[in-house]
Image (tube, rainbow, N blue to C red; front, side, top):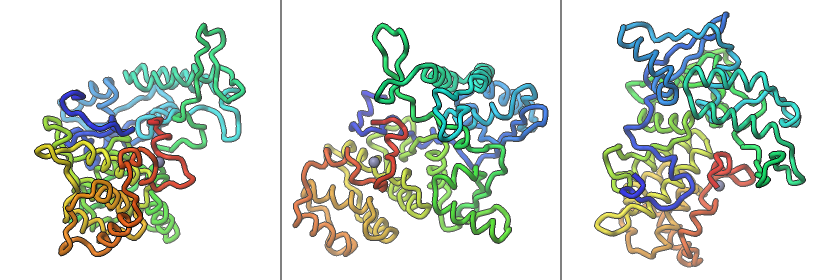
Length: 384
Ligand SMILES: [Zn+2]
């Protein structure tokens, strides 16, 4: 794929996904019952099968026999399975230390051993590798710069504590009942982990606070939204992958879609999820720098500009990006009659200020990102 679908170098490029590689989060969940007390986890079956050969085999068997979508793991610990869920859904390895403790001194090796044994049973190589990395990192001492030095290593390898390793109190509880989110009309129903979505989206955090205050059902209606776009959001939330509208047999560069990204950005704006908005503006940059039609760059069309301006407010980073890329290349693509007035004003202002210098260089900075003092999603995912 690399040679055939050559894409511009933007940090997150390997996280883009074809539309038909997206997990369908509206599909019914598999119930995994863990431990003697049969603690129940509801998990997306496709997601489980995409990483664990154990689940792939067991669920294939279940489906062939037309059985219930229930898998029992009576001899495993619910805590270990919850650690696995945190890895699967959030790419974090939970260690047994508390906030404020030194993870290197307080590490709980029993937890790590249990997690490794579970990864071994579930045949999930990535999870096992993440756990062994956590062990390696934990076993080493810090140098003056806070890096961990492997004692006795001939090349004095330096390991920094991977930022995917988190203290126990920050783990999400995946055994908690899911939120029901009804999207579009007629509604498509999604079951979403409440901690995960409330942690990422201020919209959900606020709405759920309201729900609890009023003692209502844990159901949220997003009847004006498009299920397809919400599924893109969930693929990011659960897998840190961004679906950008092409299918696997298509050329990623040719078939990625501006409409897909504009819709995703507008949803991210409504849900108040800055990381998602930032990854979407990065994808816009990638699409702009890479996609060619008959050798010519493909700009977001007038209908996309209208849609973006109608659904966002002044100061929006995607607006800023659109203006920058039109100003940077001084192309006469703006349409005086049809373009939103605000866009034309922004563009004129940008040209007058001369902010149209090296677009590619600018795009690699955080100029089109939401976070100000917060941590960039690229750093969270170690993409820089
Ligand atoms: Zn950033």
